[in-house]
Amino acid sequence: MQYTAPHYYKKFHCTGSDCPATCCAGWQIQIDTASLKKYRKVKGPLGSRLRNEIDWKEGCFRRYNGRCAFLNEENLCDLYLEGGGSRAFCRTCRTYPRHIEEFEGLREISLSLSCPVAAKLIINSAEPVRFLHGENPDREENFGEFDFLLFTKLMDARSMMIRFLQNRDHPFRIRAAVCLALAHDLQERIDRNALFEADALFERYESPGVWNWFSGRLEKLTENPDFAKTKKDTEQALLSLFDHLEVLSYEWPPYLQKIKENLSGRSPAAEQDFSSLFTDTMAEQILIYFVFTYFCGAVYGGSAYGKMKFSLAGTILIRELVRGEWLPAPQQQDKDRIIRAACRYSREVEHSDYNKVTMEQILEEDQRFGIEELFSLL
Image (cartoon, rainbow, N blue to C red; front, top):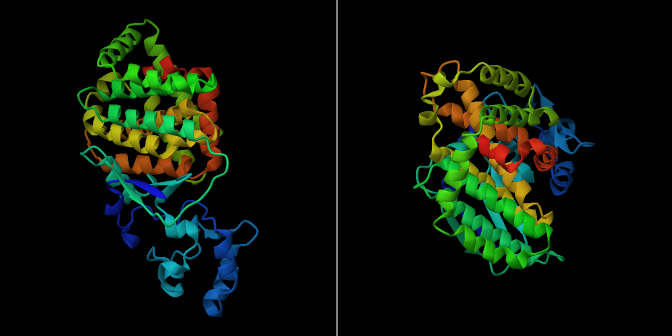
């Protein structure tokens, strides 16, 4: 078994009760089958509490005012304290904030952006992310039908995207545009069952002239008389995606409403310093996080372009959440608000399979999210 993880993975350390956004509140904590069986057998006072504080029908811990029943007043876990440490955890609590994507012969492990500590490691990293590789030769598995050809091309494309995104000789907007277009063109070959053409496609994108070509394309878009309207309409359409998603936190709707109000009343003159707050390097790190986590998952559905759209949309939406928080007081260059906005977004979108699937589906099918419309937001 092969393993891949970003270089900052081993730097993570849980801050426990000092965490500004505990992982034991704000969402439902699902319990795996093996842990449910284990909890049924626990004796004594802890066993009684487990039987009372688990929703056995839903397979999750009960919550009170949005907090897990085992989260005490010091923001520490009573199950951990009374049950013998991490061995008492269910799989969700034992794993989080680690996120694992499974492929045949490969596990890719990342840290979830929904954790403030992880988000700080990801977003505040000045150096380009590196990926570490390991192997456990004693562990093998067979996924049955697994499209290794498609997976290989997805891996090749993702490696190119990450390399492009880390090329800081060019503005982020151009780097992101190149990656979106690459996914678009790869999707066309997937749909035609013409993966044998993928290598020629990759060679074309490796050409040094690709940067000037996309720079000219974006410049030409901005010169279009309808550009401002297209940008505004696409931004509003992107924000409206949230209206189609399930709400995971009671704090999310009023927060999002305030963000939309702030964005609707903004003026270009008030945003001169925003790029010094939300930098190209931060955008790079966030987009690479999404691309690394989700892009190769297209091997299971064949939607490389949809995965890239989902990744880019997440990056842009986090940027707009930050902008919406910043606009009422633009003189305050509080970089912690970027961490908070990223965590909020991740908690609402990434921790719901329904939300992820719905968002990707709308991005794929709605004509308002065509390639040039998304280019306008860069």
